[in-house]
Amino acid sequence: MKTIWLLLFPICIAIAWLLGYRARPKEEPQRKSTIPRNYLIGLNFLLNEETDKAVDIFIKMLEVDSDTVETHLAVGKLFRRRGEVDRAIRIHQNLIARPQLEKIHREQSLFELGQDYLSAGVLDRAERIFLDLVSTKTHSARALQILIDIYQQEKDWEKAAQSAIKYEAITKKNMQPIIAHYYCELGEAAFIKKQYDAALEYLEKAGAADKSCVRASLVQAKILMEKTEYKKALTSLKKIKDQNPDYLSESIELLALCYERLNEEDKLVAHLKQLLDEHPRVPVVLILAEHIRKRKGDKVAANFVADYVRRYPSLRGLYIFINIYVSNAEGRAKEDLHILQNLMKNLLANKPDYQCNSCGFSGKSLHWQCPGCKQWSTMLPVHGTHEAIA
Ligand SMILES: [Zn+2]
Image (cartoon, rainbow, N blue to C red; front, side, top):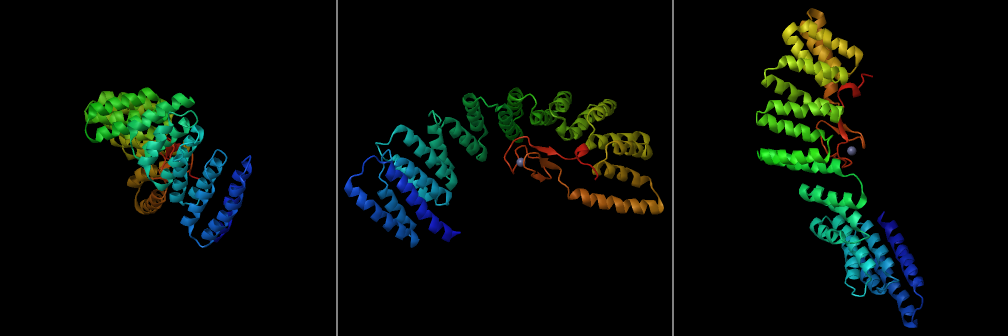
């Protein structure tokens, strides 16, 4: 690979130089004779793998004027793509240092330099450059997009939200669902520090930005439960089925706990039955079956689950059914069911609980921002009706 680059790179430089050279309307005779000589010297340095010296020659050779700026930018980009970020930085800094550089080219060079710093992982310098570029006409949207990425990486959610608001104003692209996540991040951080009121304020903001933000409802409910305000927590949790029923499974255990604390288990059963009619999900069945088992015994609970699995076949549903059934069975049947139970347990242990519907990333825990494709709200629970036995 390195050999190919050694051969290709001088050719790219030559093409870049020729483009810059030919673009000049007039060449004074002296320069005409010196450029090819310098080029050969540079080429020699490259072939001897003395890239630093080669860069010096190329920088000297390509004098900065309006005709050669594009060539400099192309060469800088080439270095960055090769992973030689230091050299790309030198080329772009050399451009910016020229006082006669036109505004448009200065901004372009700054943009490239910012990308060099990003590639080098020097985020604070990149941030300063892109902040300067926000006020430009040509680069403001792209600069804000990069700033949003930087702030996300640094988990600076306040600044991410501010940049997203500006980005939305410029591009008219709806950023509210993402902004809601930034407020949720801030809310969760305050929740961890037990600053409940501050946390609830952030979640209010999240809900105002995006009415269908499930995460805001979930975190809000958790905080209210911590404050033993179970009725209010229930109100938050009940929103989820309309916000996005795919996340319903995330709310079921919390819902059951709230009703339990309020001593309203009858209401829980009625609510879960209604949920099951509208959105059949295994976690709903699991909790309902447990309540039926407590009140009416194993057999009725097993029949209830069997009926559900018949209607909505899924591995997890079947597993719950066997778990209930095994305690009722006797002798050989019990032994066989135990084998099946273990087999399914192992099978389910290897299955992901969440999967990104954009890039396919999967895992055992829910990430609101997919670690694979970095998109928000694309990871969904896979249990329930999404998973057929076949
Ligand atoms: Zn993804």
